[in-house]
Length: 171
Image (cartoon, rainbow, N blue to C red; front, top):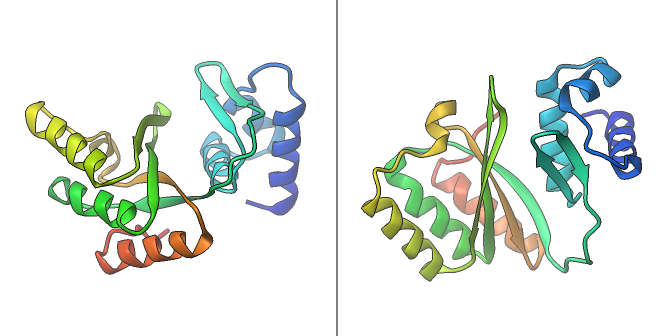
């Protein structure tokens, strides 16, 4: 994302009294909707409180959050979900969501809010009990997790752990 487009997109979202449609934003910036989806993901990773709705994107003012955030792009097999999530929480992270960028439906996000091993274990138990198919199957396993942590160092440890497991997806 160019710095100018990033700043302009963020400013448009902050100033808009209503949701801004992704396709209209793409037309405004002379880029594809896919580029806007990626730009929004980057802005979110930088901490911008941008919500996705069925009518478009909204900038939501929130209270000051003492945590740092990073969006991790990952890919792994279904059997490796537990190792991935534990690599995050064991290194001080909190898994906020899972997000995919579907070529037809656009951005699909589900909140997870996993903060510790107990949360991960509970999630995995739900997976075992259900006829579970991860949403990442829709994108050949590629998905994103917004992770929050207390320090940048914790995010670095998480990134190293995911990289050692071979789960970080390269662009």
